[in-house]
Image (tube, rainbow, N blue to C red; front, side, top):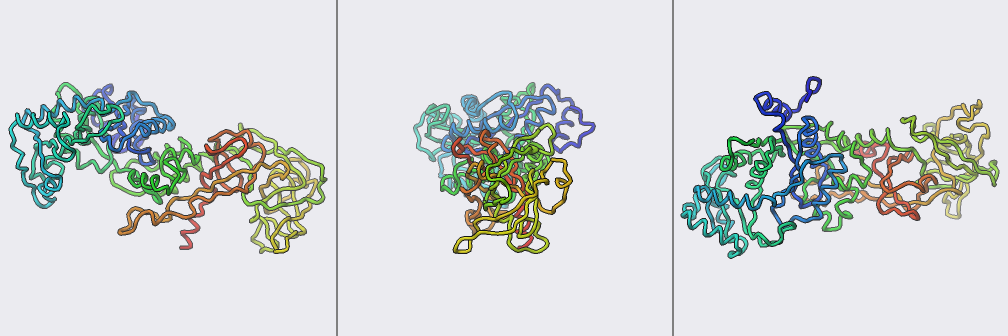
Length: 562
């Protein structure tokens, strides 16, 4: 790896030091070890980008290992979703592995611990064991079963394995130090009884290993050189190393655990348990609801892999927990789509404009640039006719000098088309606006080269030709929570902060006809409105668009008022 022109994060510095101290570059191996008990979210994306990014930087393999040791919460659905998310982000793992691949080896090592006097079976209640553990300022007390004979422990552990005992009645504990200042070292549980069917091993096992026992030993089996975890596992590192001490061979790579701060994002929750709660209580429409911080939700909303990877890069790798402003994520998708998304015209709240001096039977197909940021994107044809839709908010009968859109006796330019001037409105008996009557300057056509086409007017509006317009459903997504830190407020349920306007459905929108050929997932800029993509619910007869992000940050204005 050539790091001469690159500022290294602290994890890369650790790897560089290890290489300088004699570690063979060919021995580098990383892993991403998700538990398949939910869908991956933007926080996991940080870990994915970190581990797979290190693999790319050092030309080292990266394993995808599913930490599937809790059959009560894990499902094949989550395994499949995790694999899809990683592939979508553009990464490829070297080996697809499962902690359940190692159940027999982990069991054999646990037997070895018992034989070496380093583990024992405890059949006290969990409440009693918790009391015996003490507190951070008070040492623990030994279990009355701590000094059982090796023979008795082996027999009891075998009976646990055979399913002779009920759940919660017996556990296998490591025999370490009940006086340790690290609570995790006070005889932690290694195995518990769970009589549940596993998504891979089915009903083969009645006992399942705990995470701490599984984690380091799995890293050792796979010869992971650097086991990179989030910061909450820092206190686990001592136990990680103790477990490795029991099985490590000096001739093989000994994994090194190091920790970085997990990614926390403002205006959302990152706990899988709380995200599952939102799904189960139908507060969102599934794990891939575009308001969710899941990778599948972001994908459905229109986020790109490039924007998520850029976000991970800009947010950086930290040693201390912090909260990243969601505005940075929104900046990354705007920046990416500004370069890549075709520009199209859509009207979300239509009002009719009639150009009374334009021939009734005439229509034109005007040339429109697809993306001014990308010359190679070329041009498309947009139909123009006598009757158009514009946004209702783009017209006022009377307005002050700072209103640069359409008002009576005032001119504006229609994007890619002509200059028009409003002179009359038509209303119903209730005073509701039905039509705006305008005239157009026939010589002012954009791109025609005439003097009139060069004439400057202050306002430019988007529009669609009514004769050619395609009706569409537009889902206006916003932040799911209206509090910056919804799950950190004492004595207040995080669900109380759900934004009631996080989804507004508009069934009265119209889009230009070029969008009829668009495919699910295609992304566009609706000019002057924001970035949108075609949802999976869309059909050829019923187009459905999701708003990825508006062009302007309406939240910044709201917060400024507050």
